[in-house]
Image (tube, rainbow, N blue to C red; front, side, top):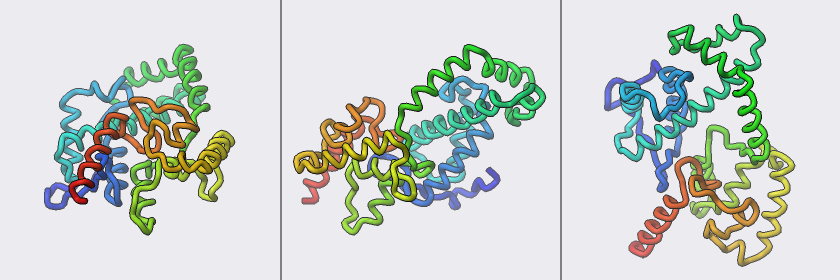
Length: 262
């Protein structure tokens, strides 16, 4: 936070891909900055980041703009959604610490500096240690165990795709199934778990079919065949902010540009 640039000429340029996602070296710096910023300014006792006071939103946005060249509304929308995800993850990690801490004295020491009221903190801790909250938490924990975790970590799908393109001789975007496969491997090339290994086997079977290998539509490509239909709010192997409708718009735009250039 101390590294915020005051002079606008010293602001860092952020590169965005065609889907409006930040990529490149500066995007890594931006991600780290957003994490530090949102943890410092937004208390975890707030129920929903979208409902924070307007003054707090202005502080967040002005702080980001002081460091990075992001002035468009669509950039702001993406960044605030990113901060919401980062904030929820940070809140989840702290709640885990709270529930595992054995006594009240130790739990009091976990209070973040941006929570000024000790009563507010005690109320928050009491809620997270309630039987109702623990039951809900366990329910969602079981749901998460059925998911297939990726190994992108902070890199994310957008930067992974950019990295794969940069290492490709043709500089063409990799297929969605190749991106997903790469994202679910360990450093040694092995699948992240047994469920992913099963999915890999199915992927290889479908790749033997020339018709399937040449399909680019997300409605019928190999990944959809293996993992099931896509949701409207999220598209596998594309990263944050890419929905079915947005992908359709981007695809139509790219096709139009190719026709013009051709």
